[in-house]
Image 1: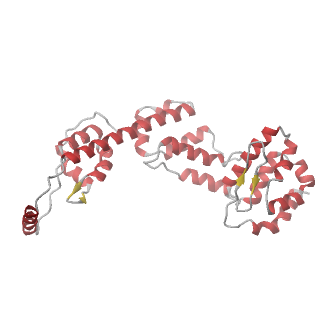
Image 2 (image 1 turned 120 degrees about the horizontal axis):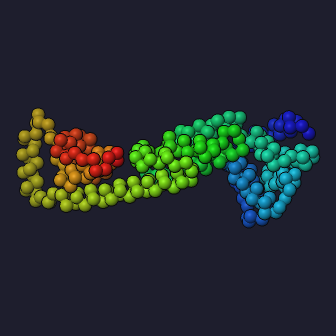
Image 3 (image 1 turned 90 degrees about the vertical axis):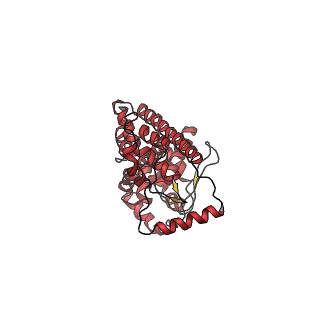
Length: 300
């Protein structure tokens, strides 16, 4: 049966595939045939199915021309009906790569390659996610494109990770001349080390700021003192602008040594004024002239 006839044969069953529930791939052991349950099939489902099938076929030492016939019986529900009804010359002569192409044509949207590639290019490393975890997520998404023209090799994957990594990490990599590295795996390992060092520094700054806030916390006022202070403040605050609070000496030192961008996020979570969070940028702007200039750790 020609490929076009196979597509027209399966076409009447297509509405049954869109069930709103993702198909589940199961395999009890590496040497047991995997099975695909009924449900919707997306690129990640197919990739999981192909991977488990290939591991099983490799374990059983099954030849290329027998691969499709072997794994087809693991496709459950309507898929079994479709493939077994047309198994004659199609399944007997179809090689593994042709089978994968057929499956993608039958079950995926016509623009799935483009959509998947665009999803990868739109990804961006969150400031709270380690670089290595983010890189694995991007490379895992790229694996869905394996065997297609849209698959990114190491060169394009590196360019993608460089463009989508967190901005502060990108600056630190530039200062460390990471771009001089030619091997992709060595580049990944080096960026990972820089990122871990960067996060360790931010964690240390967070702990120091927390300690300073505890030491500088005001003493508890008596009810009489609190009422008097509230009364005086109400009487004199009309028409006046509350001045920006001064940075502590320790905060000035941290700002001087680590730069404004590295300290801002930490102060935003720890600096308070009368129970309300103070606008950090206003604090830094109001005190910037009092902070000694230094280039101890530039670029952070």
